Length: 259
Image 1 (cartoon, rainbow, N blue to C red):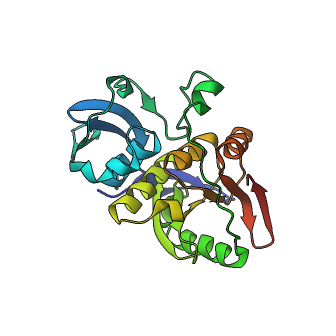
Image 2: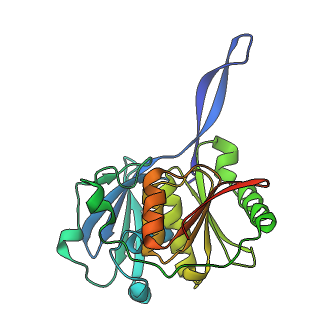
Image 3: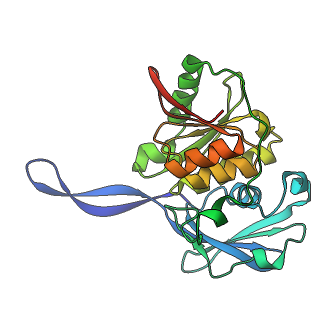
């Protein structure tokens, strides 16, 4: 299944309205079924389901990185309504972590949290990464990630997340209509390819919000680079957790937050 859908549209070309077509990013309901029970529901782009599920388990704190090798037997199904069920078996997790009625929206990974304390109380404190950043090489890595964003090129409606090492090699790039899903996918892809996440830098094609910082903390990612802005809660959480954020990164500019 392609992640783009072509639909008929009317288009204003500056002079008149014409009949045309357009490609849209596919957005589907994804049901995450873990050990025979519905763990949660996501709205997102339905490719890379295995990577999405693995990354979500780690980045949302359902399981630890050390338990990764015990996650197995993945399969996916799609029903007649286009709902995708992602099925994974692994170590037992606490019953209270299952929330079959929750739907995580494409635009927000933490929109149903009750308050600030709930958001930050269980995040780990990371060992600070004090290595210097070569901004020329970093911008080259961001350009390379952009060149891999095929979904964005065709639809203009997909976010990307990437991982690079400290030699600025691009290790993984994933896209999704939800920025937090793209992060889950790139984390899961790194796990499947035995990439040391703790020695990697997370690249974002857009802004950096709190939910991305939280996912990075739980995955032991200590440096985030975003092309867009950083939110206030993302900044304060990064400082508390020992993580650093480089936002608004351009060849001649970067805002540095954290250690």
